[in-house]
Length: 474
Image 1: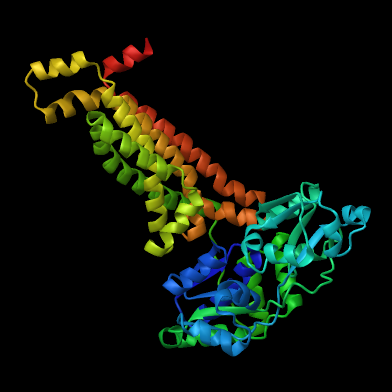
Image 2: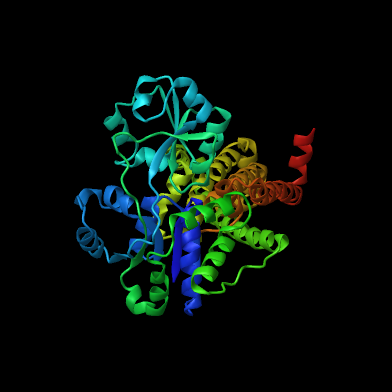
């Protein structure tokens, strides 16, 4: 069975706890943590890409099932059943939204409640992307309180805390179980119109788990009513302060509450980096090889049929304009989670630099050389293999090198859809505000990009005809 979580710490801890209980029941569990936001997890659950993930009752009512206007537990249960999904009873703790300001800034402006914000339009708001997009989030809050600030930015939730403390933003959205909620430097503004609703944590799971893995499901449902708010905050604090990892916090909880001794991964730094290096090479290598196989013939065609070539290059350029993360998410309904959608997205990004350089290299061959090949009686196929491709080899290698460098950087985003690679420690580090983890992914990625440049330099020395190298070098 596969257990997923959203990108924030609390969701990952609860998913780890559920996974530890399922493993203790004898189930084979794959942990897919930090996958993304609500819609991504919900769609993955419906598609069967994951079997379980932690969610909140308020999010169920106001976001996932918003178009079905549900309010009671029975209505929610019936609406979920139409998708083949069930929800556990509340796990115990709740996690509602709130707004916060740096205390000294709020006191200087005499702001204590959300209503007070309505008279200070000069304030800069930094809100999480999900809060900005949710129907019951920023749009409804602004309408309820008459808020119309000059600046509203979308920010990663964990980075927003840094922005608030250093004064880059004035107001941010908080989760009520965030460790920072108790930070004396932050003033939680009074929700004087009682806008934010109760948001109790539950487990959402596929209904067929009752037949496929009844013991594991029963083990996970032991969590119902067992995670108190104080315990959840303590685990969040332990992880955010670096005292424990998410998995260690979860293992400590199941040991205390259920007497379950969860195994912890014992991989050292070298082993972790090696595993992620193999995953990253797989993503980049497969996508680059596929792109080269498609873009090489298309580039030759573009050089020989300029009008058709312009259309082909325009189509490849259009693909390049799609934001990386959006392209990854578009692939999920077609290919699910994991390496496959990441490879397809990287393949599409690789097409333009290779295609353009092949077309430029082949079309730039002097007419005198082409005519000489024809006079020698070479067939079109032999002219391509013996004259045109070798003459264009430097441009082709430059296109492949550019595509490889782009892929190495973009492949880090694959971690958001469970593809692994160097993005895993980077996004975990951002989630935990841990620079060491960020560097654990960023440094190897940079070294891989440098290594790729070295490989292509050697390939150029080996593949590009000596005469071309001497002529270019002067």
